[in-house]
Length: 133
Image 1 (cartoon, rainbow, N blue to C red):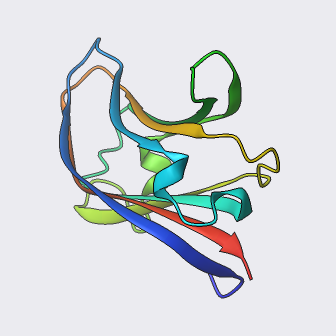
Image 2 (cartoon, rainbow, N blue to C red):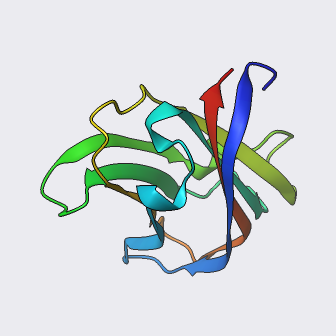
């Protein structure tokens, strides 16, 4: 992370994911992030058990403020966040890389959870926004 400078950090708290119910965990306006037009990386950190059997996924979308235009979409399996062996409680992190938005218009950033077959506890969800140095 030496090549990046943090623009903003948002603590989204804890969230319980229930099977069969895709949900937005956190919605953020680009106006809440200093120098949003320089944004090049969104880092999501989550405390979880990272069970091998889970098939939950975490997604990030960036839309135009009116929701009509999708500008960025990525979805990754929750177990890809784990930094150590699976089936162990830990803080996992995933970096979503993107190209800066040069149009200057307001955007809406949404962190989603796509549930798997089991209830999953997501704790200490932190979203950090970075730009390249």
